[in-house]
Length: 286
Image 1 (cartoon, rainbow, N blue to C red):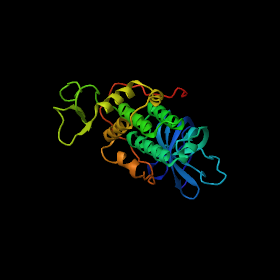
Image 2: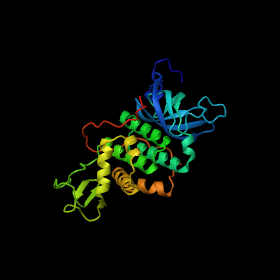
Image 3: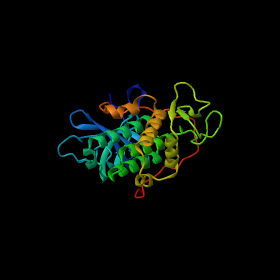
Image 4: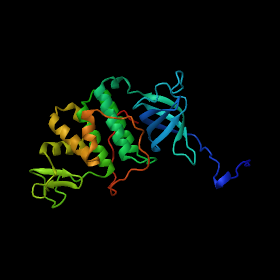
């Protein structure tokens, strides 16, 4: 059936018109083979949020994309959307900074995979999240500079929770308001003093609480210079990941991440809005 230019197609559907090409900085979260020559790419755009797109011909030997679609590549990307399609079309990528060499260490590969999966879980598609973009770039650069993985992951998890609006007050009980000077516990509903702790809530040490307060006030590079005990670092990481999701994240890193499934679709559900929080950024991040 012939349809004139600009006229709706059969069934009342409008022609699938491409929108103008967009340009943005982006971090590649994950990518998957698609068909014989393409790749499905999950990425975090600095200006447009988390998105999924198709890079046509990316798997060919002489692909114009080269190594730009490797996990955690920091790129400048050109892409366009179509009105009736969820996936964007990735036209071109220009590599700004690569983190491929550091991922030769399998532990680093697992750590960055965890960062990618958590980011995909907490950010809805097309949800502009420039603070999260800066956080991911900060973490990747810190790991590249030699940061200990537990500290980098703890800092990432802490700020993901804070930016998401899930962070309770770190100096007082969420139920009675008493100062947290003794034993305390942490749950998704808040921090609780010894008198308000309920059965089943996980204890959190004073050392871990002190470290969490430092993370709220100090840059990651400052924490990297200190001689931090590994116990409170791991404790903060585990508690923060539990606030994001009480089941899978903490266990996933220890048993090996399974990242063979395509990235999630749709929009993440967030808690009630919180006061705006300024995300940390690397000194070299512009």
